[in-house]
Image 1 (tube, rainbow, N blue to C red):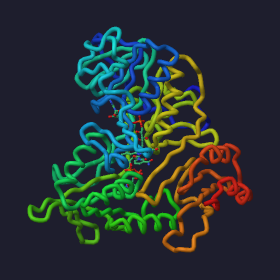
Image 2: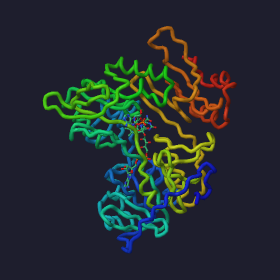
Image 3: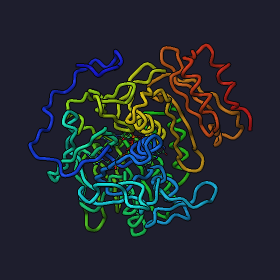
Image 4: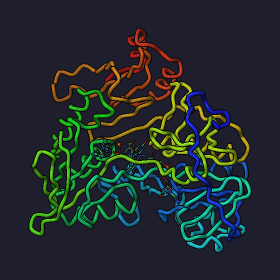
Length: 465
Ligand code: FAD
Ligand code: NAD
């Protein structure tokens, strides 16, 4: 039983879990139920309201906050001018911003669904139920909460549940470790940073690398340790990964590559002692874990929806539909990238926005396929600021074009890197080079080949100062 309109590559069967059934009657009914209150959910809510301004949408979040964006949690919120309690920060123009998409007071918020029934009171623009969804039954049009409450929806449901951080293989002393993802984690780590002398960050992905760079200016000794031999080693070609490591070291971060941790314990005199596989140890006052995320797709599995057997995301068709009437968007989906001819999971902001919009408009009957080629950006300290599209897989061959620099420490100041699969350009990384996302998207869509590289590279104006 494959998905309707599924691509031929979606060959796996739906898991045969029995959907959650119940004889209870729903406590409350809503037009639409959106599970998750992240970026994808907010974008979908906006898209629904564009067509149907008075749509009765219930957003359910187990995090408890109205929709907010996460990128500032590893960047701007650590810089001067940020307010930890208000979650405000200075943007690049020096203006005041906060992380919320709409002011938190504009949501009618409750932990009780009955209090959220009916039309919105004046001055409120959305409904937020603080609860965890444990099951969705598309045929009965119901959603079950972990407190036993059953809710129903009349028109449609959106799964925008994102991902949760991967846990380490060993336990860490309570109160001495942060598995970082949420605004709440940021607020706690801010307090900890003020009260401690040393922090160990484990992981070398986007989050660990951005946080190491951001925290290095806070007067705390930062150590960053990981198994691979350089930063962003799964994403960058080796020379660039090594270069990134050298730039992060130059900011005062003590970088420990090729380090595998096996256990941790608290030593009352020294702090947390994290032991390594070669018999050594690293000691810090606090440990921050950044080991990637796993998609929150349990709700879909329970409702016989297909999940990607490799990465675990909810498999959607080109309209972002998992099964009829159930749409999904954001980090949690496995979608078909038509330009690159493969299924992908993409854990970045732009994809959450654009897939959320598409899913939202399809919930109100648009039938728009998701053909957007998502981009992402990352900032690792002041010297590395990048944008990218497509597949950035460090195991692929790459061609890099770099601005000429006389000084060795500026060697990779600005450039573009093309990732190749069977001689086709499948990914483009723009390194300290901006305004070229549209060009990069076109190159992927046109399936340009390696023999065109010198022409293609010319579009990026790498050699202009
Ligand atoms: P999420 O934001 O994860 O939202 C999902 C929500 O659903 C969560 O609140 C979750 O608690 C809730 N939920 C899950 N399951 C349930 C359930 N069963 N019941 C109720 N609620 C549930 N991307 C970039 O492109 N550039 C960046 O610079 C960048 N910086 C980032 C910095 C940080 C610190 C982090 C963590 C991520 C960053 N990202 C960045 C990635 C980007 O933030 C994510 O891709 C985006 O948040 C995904 O949005 P989403 O709505 O799919 O999921
Ligand atoms: P990531 O996927 O970027 O990197 C995870 C890292 O953890 C990888 O380097 C991997 O080798 C390592 N790892 C995985 N399992 C491990 C284990 N058991 N032991 C040791 N190391 C292990 O994820 P992240 O850096 O944790 O970021 C979390 C999420 O937030 C991701 O979805 C990421 O895309 C997103 N994010 C994005 C940005 C951005 O786009 N600028 C910034 C921050 C976070």
